[in-house]
Amino acid sequence: MDKVALIIEILKTLIKTNSTLSTGDIHSKLHSEGVLPPPGDRVARRKLLRALNTLFELGYVEEVGEGKVRKWKLNHNRFKFLSSYTRDELISLIILFSFFPSHYRSMPFFKGAFDAVSRFEKELTEEERELLRFSFERIPNINERCVNLEPELFKSIISTILENRGAYLQYRGKVYKLFPVKFFTYNGLFYIGALTEKGYRNFLVSRIEVYEPLNEEISLEEKKKRVNETFEIPDEEPFLFGVLFPHRYATRKEIERGIKFSPYQFFIREVGEGILVYMVGFTGRRFASWFLTEKIVELYPPSEEIVEKAREQGVKEMVPRVTFQVQVNRQRFRKFRETILKILKEKQDIF
Image (tube, rainbow, N blue to C red; front, side, top):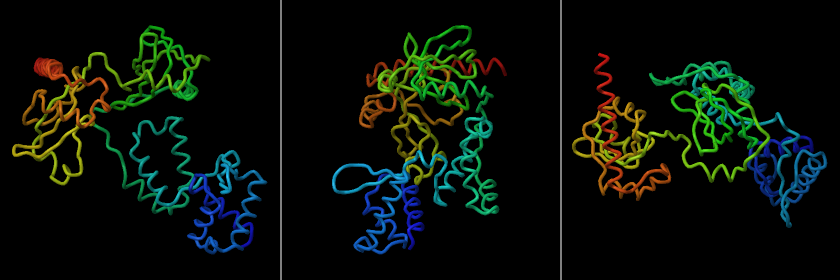
C-alpha cells in the first residue's frame, strides 16, 4: 500500500474511533480492516510510523501522553467540518431525529442539527431515505403544547448558559438578575432554570419580555452545588404511594422488562387484582390532572412498606425533596386527594 493510501486509512480510523490510540492500537485496527499485515510485521510497523510522523508534521494528528508508548489523536482544529458516521450510526441518527417534535424542527438553532445529518444522507439511496422518512414519526400527546420562539432570544439563552454568564431578565413585568443554569422542555414548552437572588426558580421562555446577557460569570461547580431539581414548582411536594392498575395496562413480559407508567415509578409487580405500582406523586394540579386520565383500580396511601421500598431503591437520588417520614407522606397524600376532588368539582360545574 502506498503512503498516501495509508495516510487516508489512518485518518479514517482516527475519525471513526474519535479517541486517543497507541501506534499498536492503530496497527491492530488497520489489520482488522485488511489494510496492513499483523502488528508483528516490522516492515508494516515502520510504514505506519512514517505515515503517522508525516501527519504529525503536517499538523493533522497530535502525539499525546508520556512514556515509551506513542499515542495519537486527531487534531480537530484541522477538520472542523469533517466527520464520519457508519451506516448504522447514520440510520440511528435519522430515526432519532424523526422523534423530535415537528413544530420545532424549523427553528434556526435546531435546523443546524438536521442540516448536519442531511449532509451524510448521500450515503443512502433515495429509496432508503424515502423509506426512513415514511416509516418513522413522532405522534404528539393530545395535550402537548407548542409556541414559536424568537431565534435571537433562543441563541442568547444558550450562549449565556454555555459561557457561564448571567443576564438581566424581564418576566411578567418584573426584572430579575440571574444566572441561567438549565434549559429544558416540559409538555412541549421551553423553560430555563436560573439562580436568582432568592434561589433557584423556573421561567417559561415564551413569557420572557427582555433578556440581556451580562459579563458576570459563575462556575459549573457552583451551578451544580446550588441546583437539586431541574423543574421545581412551588406548590408541589413529593409523596410516596401505591396504585393498582388494570391487568390490561401491561403484559407479563412488559413487566419483566421494567415497563414504567410514570418516570417516578420505583416498584412494579403483578398481583391477583391487577398491576401494583409504587411511585412518587406530587401535590398540586399538574400531577393530579394527569392522574385523572388513568384507569385506576385502587389507591394505597403511604405506608411503612412503601417508604422502605423507596429507601431501598434510592428514590431520594431521583427526587431529592422526597421524605421517608410516613406521617409527612400521608399529609401530602391527603392534599393530593383534595386536589383531585377539587378538579372533579370544577369539571362537573362546566358540564
